[in-house]
Length: 84
Image (cartoon, rainbow, N blue to C red; front, side, top):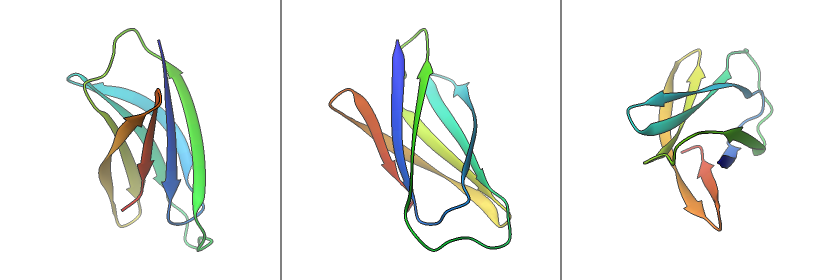
């Protein structure tokens, strides 16, 4: 099955790295590691093929200051998330 994630970040400079499974949750890994970023909303869409339906879809954003994890919600067959 295909999982589609549409995520909005508060700043530019975000790159998608990979996905991983943590228990039954699918985690999309992104990173923002530079020093200067554009202060505009940045949207990204990622599609991955998986063999099972995830219990939750999570977004993990790694930054120089650490990172954060937030949950996506499903609407009309795709998952939506926004950086808090």
